[in-house]
Length: 474
Image (cartoon, rainbow, N blue to C red; front, side, top):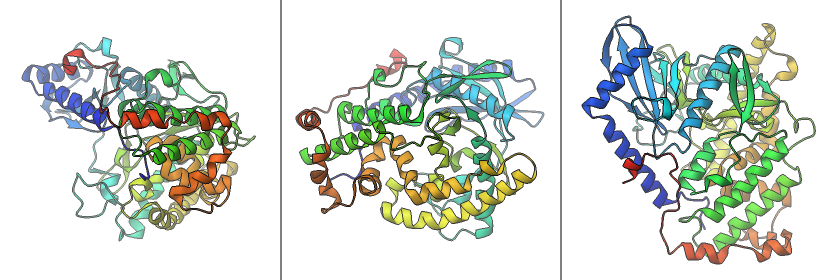
């Protein structure tokens, strides 16, 4: 059986095709000229060069160099990759300005931004920012030498301890500063005026985007745009419901057999039961305050100079106030690669991760000491203790499973099932047969097996590219 849910490959092909067609349009001479002129309207100076665009997972950026030595970039979300472009851009601008005002984390300065409707270029929503000069990103500095750009990064197994502690330590300070930003509800920040923000919109997560893009989840199944959460338990319950909706609605590559479908269905029902019973929260943290959390905060979005000093942190679009359990979990990126993609399997990842975690917690504790000495932190605000406890208790895996729909199955059966429901007598692949008795009569009767097996033969696209230009779709 599959250890994780695969992406819907029909949706993935369509997503890639839409992105490619849109990017192709960018290279037309008239388009490039218009982009350059638009940047100059919002960044003063004598232009020298409009550089070739750079594409990331969700955005395309153009950099304009100026005679004064500075640069500006304009960034557009890619249709086909970004399912909620206007919302994504608005959220990122508001959180960047909030972080800039409340921390010393180096984030880009926003010169101008606008929605799709406010873009005279017809290229969708945009942000124009000052470019942060850098030598490389943190992922490159930590990656195994000899890996190509197309290879998935893996932490250099022979990385120098001094170098690792230097880089981990700076990143630890970023996480520490974010953890001090406390908000009363779970959701995305909206800037009201120059000095006021409110949690007024849903938490637009990385996972929500991917559920719609690669899991063909109908947009209507996500929380409403203006929906926020006053408790961690309510949010965990919503995430658990989305796991079930994902299995129900993904048309292709969701299951590979009847037993695989039953196994996935039972795991999601049991996870939902735990969430509804409040097993993922405590009375001291359930009602907040809640911490700022960025789904996409990882080494590839952290920029460093030639002295290995962090000079910028970019790509804040999937950032929101989240349950404390998220920020109390140690960062998954210590090995660069995610556990579900580790070449030797999740248990090998876990074993190696533990050794690197101790290095990270050591430098985090040192950063806490410095912050306390400078009056920026109270002793009870330390993160190192909660992170160690999260790892030892297995709460790390609860937060990971809640946020990662496509990794859910491997995490649930290997890390959560035994903890919450006791040791099983059978193998991991067959454990679901023991757990079926934990379901209600209605839950056992309503398994979606026949429907999912029928879908295995269809290979159709069940996707709602809501905000994509119709010209691109044709």
